[in-house]
Length: 341
Image 1: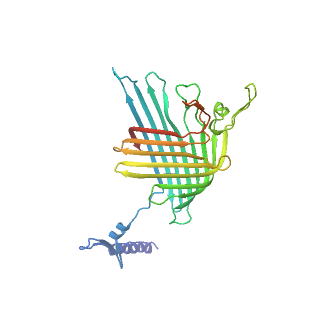
Image 2: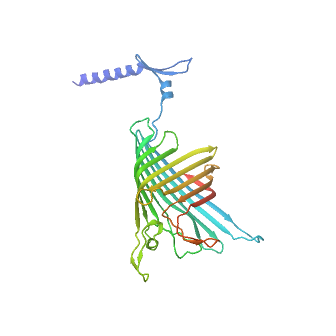
Image 3: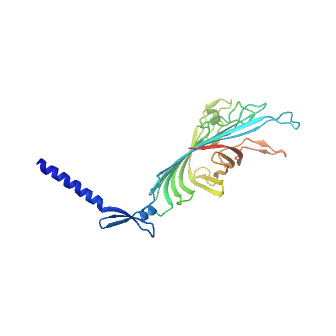
């Protein structure tokens, strides 16, 4: 039996060696194509390598941290002026998944800015914290429309003030805080950084966890109830919920070499309380890329929210304008460093 086992081993080894000897690589001297010849089979290795397409990654990640700093100083400056320094930190993180008929986009944005000016206390110039998540599914591979569910959360990090008054905050963390959740359809074409989302049913919740602001009815919540002597008999509510329609649009494009444009637009209208009054949040940002680490940004933001009322004031003609919503506009310009990892 041992002899038969040894003979079988050597026969198997000889057969495998024979098969290896039957395979060889051939290069066509005219076309320079490389072939693998194995017995009666011939494989064009050059063609396989040219036609090979690696499977695209299912997850795409973005990690971006930046800092903009501006400074001005005076020494014996006859025209006058105050020394000042401003800093703006920002961070953006994305985790986007796409495979076959499913896509899931997640984004977190943080911005915080401070200004230090001679003779004044530190002032806040920027404050934002946002998380966005959209999960979509499409019925056909060639369709650019996805059945989607979208969630959005917005608030700020610290108290905001109407300077120079720093004793009475007019906003703060979760005052307000916004949470939107709804179902709809999203248009997201392949190979284009463009999305259009339409949700006929979206819940919008506004939170005001600062009780003093809630008692004032800030940001649309129900304010406190007081008796004839001014004694509070019922606290203001800390939240309000609306049901309405939401439309969002996001678009990024390369305008020129090292110049990039980003546009974000959000429109919302409540069905129950004030249908037809449209809340608007529109951001436009233009980025000028100097190199991999130095960038300049020009940005604008326009906000209109029917629930945000401004204090009454008297015009130059003596007319008194009462509490009412107004268009809010912000413009920014900065240059700084950015790090991607």
